[in-house]
Image 1 (cartoon, helix red, strand yellow):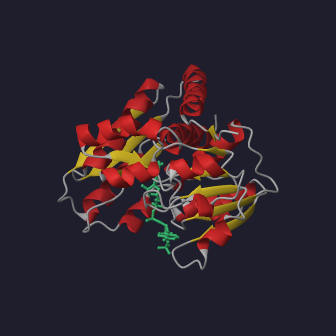
Image 2 (tube, protein in one colour):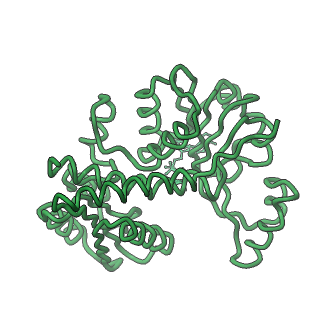
Length: 308
Ligand code: NDP
């Protein structure tokens, strides 16, 4: 049977519609959630991510503010901006776009954010609360993965979830969220011995590695659900031909011709389609959920802080 494609679009749209409704409800009580996004320097990918966060906030009725500092901004300047935002009552969420330039200590900046406004869920207080199984603002990409699974009626409780990747942004919080949902959890990384034998035990396999097409048929148990968090650029035509079925190649070739690359996840989609019962596409999968979950966290932060 053909594998089911778990498209992120309808799920992200549904979450955004729910957030927009909640914003209307809050506005009726005189509360307008506000999100401040701080960007330092001119990294082109960061500019795209920030642009989409600001645009989506506005579409949903969330007040948004984009603070852009030059690449030469000092550590103290960035911390100063965060402290000002902490004090402002009209700002419910503060997001500092990573990466930061080398003179700015990213951990110190993230720790300077008021945990109640930490909509990225990276502050140690929120990381700790998530680990304790308490109510917390949790990182947007892994919470987006849980939403995709739940809203696609894929059972999690009692299932074996295997995560490849142990970053603080994706892999580790993903593990905590799966535990909260009563899955049995395994985390793999670059030092895991015989990775395919571990990943083949997964009912749900999450790839958050940062290497295009790394997860292949040999890593996937027949009938598993595969969630691809990776976002990588591929410009090599021969490599693209290994990743995509002939019917998908035309649009990929066009992308490479037009902009020099095509977006590819950490999973080989052609081989995943042969082994998995369902999998998320790239683009159009988990990536779309990240911004939707940021909006949800902003509204949650407003409700918790303002007690409405
Ligand atoms: P990191 O580079 O921080 O972490 C990558 C992880 O993969 C590390 O734990 C590393 O292990 C592990 N890894 C690397 N090589 C191997 C290997 N050969 N075998 C097993 N494990 C390996 O990446 P992120 O977690 O930040 O991001 C992962 C991917 O997800 C990237 O493609 C990124 O672009 C994407 N991403 C997508 C988002 C979205 O919105 N969809 C949001 C955030 C990230 P070790 O710890 O041992 O080095």
